[in-house]
Length: 162
Image (cartoon, rainbow, N blue to C red):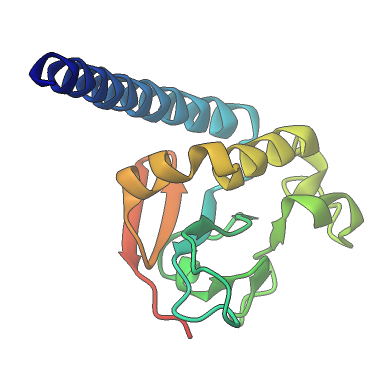
């Protein structure tokens, strides 16, 4: 029986090592993907999303997930006014949208959505919201947080939700 226990322990150790290798590789690839996204979409100054485990889910299991990101030209303090694909501040020159609304938006001026690759927004959104990436996103940024990605890197702040 000890021999079987040792084999089982070795198998579990291999599984942990593979998971750690996957997370490390996925994190590096995600950072590279973010850099490429900003290089190809210079009008997008930030990508903002919330990720958390709900406290209540109508009796269903509460599972961690990453919400749809908002793509925006907001910078600095104006990023505090970005939520759920909208800019709720007072400036008229700031826009925000989720990937699926970029093509339908009324903003088509030079320097706004006109020079944004809509497909790269969809791709970025699909990457971070993929169920296969949930463990990676949780390990990278944590639970109950808002993540702001910019060309300078990532800023993570606590997110309060119901």
